[in-house]
Image (tube, rainbow over all chains, first blue to last red; front, side):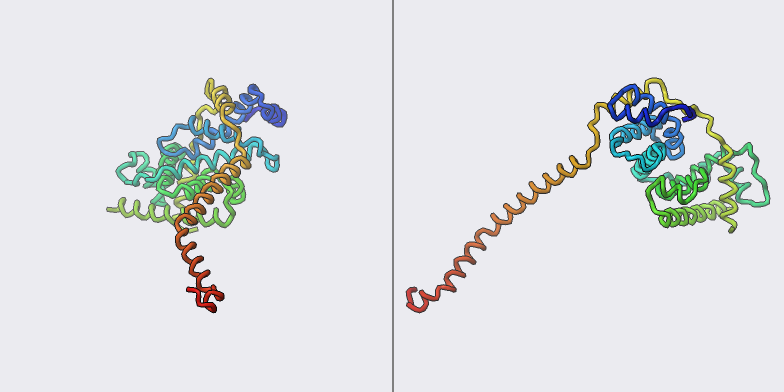
Length: 195
Length: 97
């Protein structure tokens, strides 16, 4: 995606004419965009390459429907996000979140976050990310997606609405519901920490 | 902002600092495999899908219609005969029964 000189319009025209070489160029051009989305919303035990493949296959089967109303990359992003959400919905059970499952470093980071007087160190970023993913794993797939996009990827409500196809009110409701669940989890963790 | 919001924002801000350094280039052969699979997969055609389900719906409706006729055949014929008999005014007048 870093290649600004890539002629996307011309490539799309050739793809529509069933040009295999253009199709390969399109996949290679869009792969970084797709794999970033897949890695952000990858369900447990799912192989990122398989999911990326599904996304590209959907893109090719629906390419005739692309009318150009939105940039092509947005259209592909939407396919990627909806494919990931379908995969997340397919995994029924969420692993139970237990204090004992946290690594020593993750426990330390959580402790620092829960006790407001202590600062968190930038060196703990990886553990914080793991911890956030474990907490997000406790949410319903749709709620998880909203929080991921809102708080980790810092997208606006309008951008999330465009990516998912959900209206803005629904996005806000899901964010509210997710935060309430996270708050409950935080309270449980605090009580476990004290005991 | 309440206490939880502050804690959550603190945690996510820290999580965002962990950049993803993994390679984002397509693995060798990925594009060839995907385009090959895409070429072998028929294009999605909403009209064809509608036609397929519409045809199935027609078959199911026809089968249900036939079943309804078969199951209620005796009732229909009996009622028709009774109705005819009840409305046989000429027969009643001439006392033909």
